[in-house]
Length: 485
Image 1 (cartoon, helix red, strand yellow):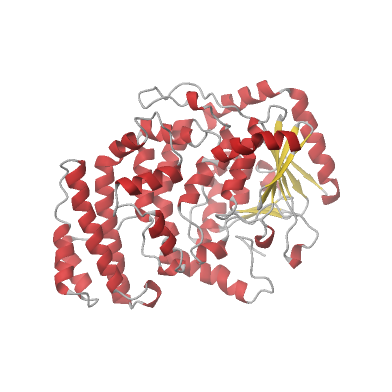
Image 2 (cartoon, rainbow, N blue to C red):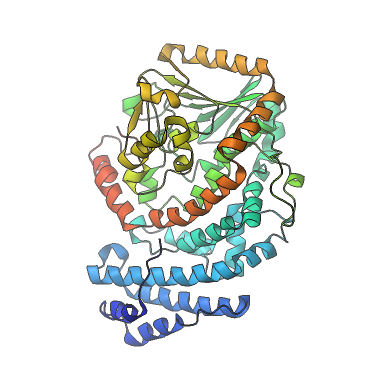
């Protein structure tokens, strides 16, 4: 979160790092103009703070080469810029959202809104070019450019009307999904690269296919996963969805399926995992599995009430876990309706050990295993072996590996026989108690704010180097996600 830096300390912290005195004074003086006036003058004032602050950051060595004094100065600048942008977004993010979405008539996805808002608020939000340039550095050399994105979306999600509208916007089918829907319905199978989606009779199957990384999640998987979910939800012949891991290249798992190794820690360390994907994934792919998809006419404008019953098209989901479901893989088990697991497999949520928040697991896990075990899993790295009694809340059925295929077919047949209409109705009725849309909105507002500071923290780098990167250097195969093996 944003560090509160007393005014009396600001100038001295920066001067101690050897930064040019005139530039330091100009930056510190620019911070005094914080009274809200109106959008344009406030934007100009905030832009000046960001411009002067980032010029000072460029005068420092790259982050990983800074002395303790230089690190403190750099962090001071980053947090003072963040404080300025947060104040601006508190006053004006809503007006910008209304302007860019035509008062809600033109819903936008997170990535579209981020791009358009960066054009509208240059200097406050990073442009696509800014982000592309930053990806050339390692994560440990980033100076917080994405922080403003987290602050912007946190403010949008904190507003009940705007937050509901944004969440519903991400429940619309993607344009890419609509482009390939007819082809999928004709062919019954699409290879989307890191994901394969297939129709078998009345069931749609999503196979994780990030073979080089133990089916980990990264910037290459989020779009294919959401397209695959859209296709299954939109195909009128399909009544149930199945998530299953594909075969991987790792020699330790030769000829075995792996469900998912969670976030691709290698790519996070190499700065190839963008902050926005945290939001896109959990308000897109994961939330569509939990809530279904909407038609554009079901979103409504910003003046529409948000307390009506959910109107999504949704289907039940089955997850078949083989080997392990770690991190993001385990999180997906909390949004499906039935979990089959291979005997000997395990689940875990090691995100805290890496230094990030395990998506919406903090919101959902306690419903399945109780508050005490949820805290142990998230804060103290508890691993759930599927054969343990404590895992009963996460898994419905444990079967030998030789029986997984038969068990999936049996469970699919049971779902199809029960009818699609009642399945969707019952899922909606259960969510009224367990996770109404407004509860999810409030959670995502907190998540958007806190995760961006975790994603860009020095602690994340230290944790990765301690728990992951060093181990990978000594491994015969350096590729993977949050896998503990």
